[in-house]
Length: 315
View 1: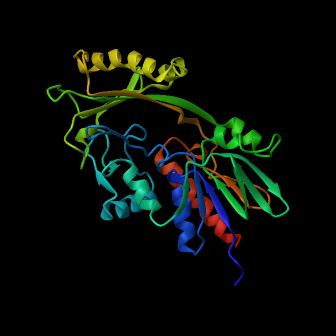
View 2: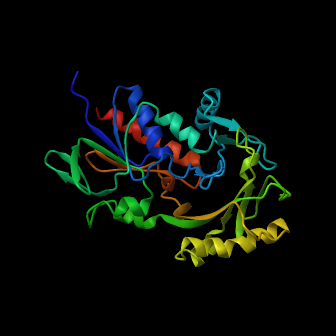
């Protein structure tokens, strides 16, 4: 048997983790490079002093295809996700004890280097060299799963993938996290309205297996987010608080236990590539993610699985 290739995966979101799990089943052990301190990409949970926590990225998970539905049921049996009752979804899941729960379960046993920002990928006569501040390393195969604009920035000017990246549309999403006073009522568990400046508001503490501390997460529409994208975080919070108050029908004033904003610059896929992934002519460089197929978490999962299946055929 020939020696297995060294594989690097950039980005420990759902696409990258799905790809890795498929590779590990066939004996290939990839090395992850994750810019953040946590895992999951937009499967994210913010924890704050006092026991508060907020799912400030992906809201919940649903499946349209049988394969992802099966994966979610397996994760449910493993205790990584639980069902959340929503009026408009027949079956919705959330990670437990936070949305990062699914990512952490998938990452178990993987070689993940956190806090490493890859700045360049270029091909050498020995393979693909990944460059970061203070280091570099060569791999036989590279899988990049960051949002399309971020992946594009890693490749050299004139790279054949450039036209494909330019065809992808991504929109921002600004998020507000609020810890509410214990006596503050919320007239819903979750509310969505794509036509409103606040397209999503949810009482995160109403999700299964959450702390019994009232936490609210609000996400602005793409249009509102674009108009306010470059504000400082405290300014974003100041602008969003009155919108939340209006929806709640109660003025949120005074010393709230916790208020913070988060900027997802590439939070939503508005124009997907409409193919599973991109691969170079040598099938040693792969790029993918939700942006290849659409805005759902399932699209990231599908892209990551497809990359793994194609990569394994090259071994």
